[in-house]
Amino acid sequence: MGAGKAMILRPGILDPHSFAPFGSARRLSGGVSVNENRGRRIDLEAQLQHDAEARRAALALYRMEPSAAPVSVAFFERHPCSAQLFVAPPSARFLLVVAPDGDASEPDPARALAFLGEGDWEIIYHKGVWHFPLIALGASTDFTMMMWQTGDRRDCECRNLAAPLFVHVP
Ligand SMILES: NC(=O)N[C@@H](O)C(=O)O
Image 1: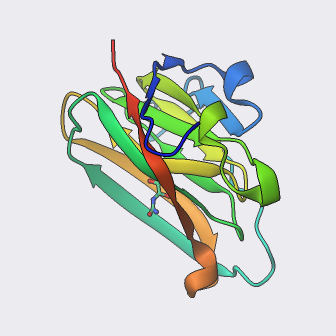
Image 2: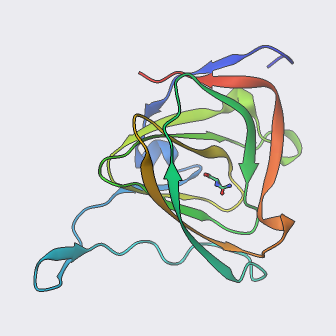
C-alpha cells in the first residue's frame, strides 16, 4: 500500500476459523450450574501463553465508549510477552482489527482483517499478534480483559501506519 493511500476494510463476521491465525474466538455458552442453580459458571481459558518474565497477572474491565463508523485505524499494537484475553458481554457489538506480520515482523496493513462480533465471546489474541485496540460499537460496553505483564515497556509495542485504514461497519 502506497504511503498516504487510505485503505478501506470491510469486516467479516467473527468466526473461530477465520480468526484462528490471530488467536482464538469462541461463543460463551454451556457451563455448569452454580449457586443453587441460579446461574451458570462458564470457565474461560486460564492458560494464556506468556513469557516467564511476564509474571504479573493483569485483570481489568474495559468500559468502552462506542466508536463511530468508519473507524480510523492509524496504528497497530502487539503484546510480545503475553496473549491477551477479552470477554464480550451478551449485549456487545464490537470490531477486532488484526494484521499479519510483514517484512521484519512489522504489521502488514495490506493484509489487515476486520471482524465484526456480536454477543458474548471469549477472544484471545495470540502472543505478539498485531491488532488495533478493541472497538465497541453502538453503546458503551464493558469488556473483561486478562493478560500477563512484565510491568515495563516490553508489554506493548506500537507501529504507526503510513496511511490509516478505514473500517466500514454494515
Ligand atoms: N492496549 C490495551 O490496553 N488494549 C489493547 O491491547 C486492546 O486490544 O484493546
